[in-house]
Length: 84
Image 1: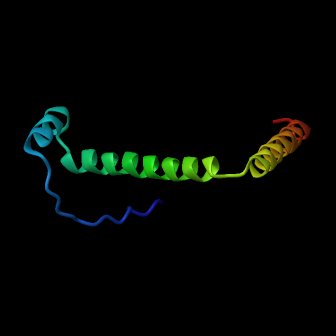
Image 2: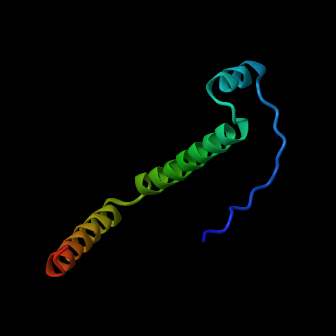
């Protein structure tokens, strides 16, 4: 049995027109705001990753590519040997 996810109540101020538009799309404001925060959070992580990799030296980037290719080849061989 899974345990319920702990949630915290927050208070926010939102543009009235935006809230009206959201209310027309859903009956659950909390779910809409939570999904919006999840999307925003994912974008922030992607932006940080993009910034990190763009700042890498070409030699570091090549090392990561080579390591990724090696790991993928190894995983494919393992899965093949196990019949998966």
